[in-house]
Length: 187
Image 1 (cartoon, rainbow, N blue to C red):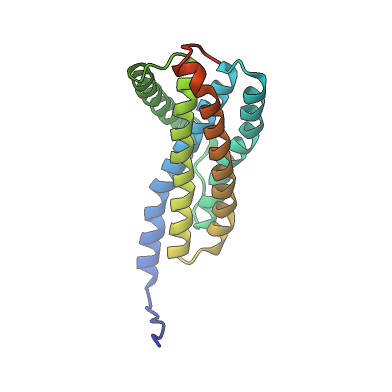
Image 2 (image 1 turned 30 degrees about the horizontal axis):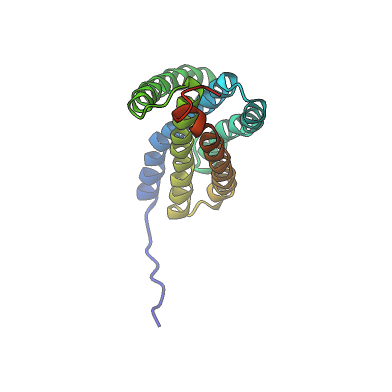
């Protein structure tokens, strides 16, 4: 039987590790903000009422998940950045991410022969949610590594929600695929 090994870590080392979490939380907020914006924009583009309704239904949790990043800061023992700083920085980063993803989605969609802006946006939305989900999942792992159970309590349910949302977005994407590729029309 292997016995557990306990290693004593001094306060300076713990403080340094906790400080290294901050850039990841900034990244997580940016990824979630970009996803939320893409979700809202895509819902407005989709003409199919049931798909548009499903996307709008998950927009509320997307806003809640974005706000939960402040709770993650606190769970790691940090103060969240001031709302005006978060707003300016988050807008800039999510705008840059969104524009880059949109450009990539446009190019890939056209190369693949797909027509329809909404379908290309849906594909981009799949990738944006996957990135944001990964942001929260990494935060959860950092919480485990640093012995911060409150982080896990916050991040785990968000990752579960976002995973369910990913399945819904994928189903919508697949439902729209034949129209975009075979019939060359938007949904």
